[in-house]
Image 1 (tube, one colour):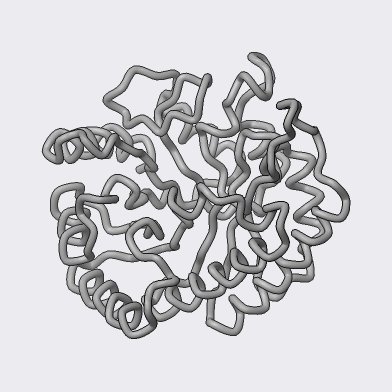
Image 2 (cartoon, rainbow, N blue to C red):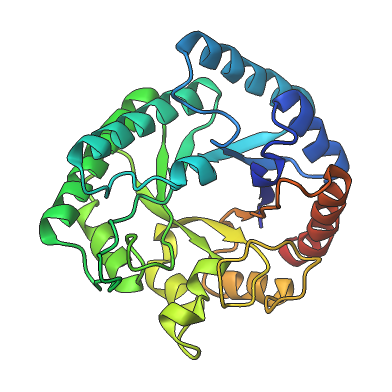
Length: 297
């Protein structure tokens, strides 16, 4: 089973490929990574992006690393993106994604994904179970346009990452299936990135209903990538596997295989406080990889 690491742990630390590529290959013993756009902002000046893309290609080639995909990261995720109440902001988010595709392609990265956006909260704090029809139709239209743009850049696959929030979309299996149907004719396939900390979120799905089995069974081949993290099922923790939690790596890998997803890439995705010292972060990631690799071997 392909196993690698999302470069989220490198943010504000190992921020260039000259730093993270040898670290991933030599310290972690991995040859598969997922780039985070927290390390490169696709709205930076074009001449700088051309140089940074060249650096990624050269450093990963030298280290023998495959950059499977690029993901939105935390910085852009903090914005409401394609579901912002102001359509002008949605337009900006769409342009941001187009530039992300262009950068990824120039860096030799053929796949891009992440969460799509979030609706604004109501003044009374109540959260609706559905998107307004007009907002959903606008989202699907933008996703079709983005697929056209991705194809033009040479991107071969796009990912939607469901999140455990009613303000984002999709957050249920049925919503994901509806979205998949509405995107069947897109120029580039839209698939799903499932995260173990999202599908197991009990405050949203319920103690006895939260879990990944339903997602795996329903979406099947529409799943393009999986994120793994340690979590307590109470929040989207993104802990490493040195922390006590409720995920058993052997069981998570077995469930994935049982649903015919033995060749679907899995990435450890963990985040750390910026003030935590670098040495302990590196040691925790190394220990986590050592725990996970045998399970996904």
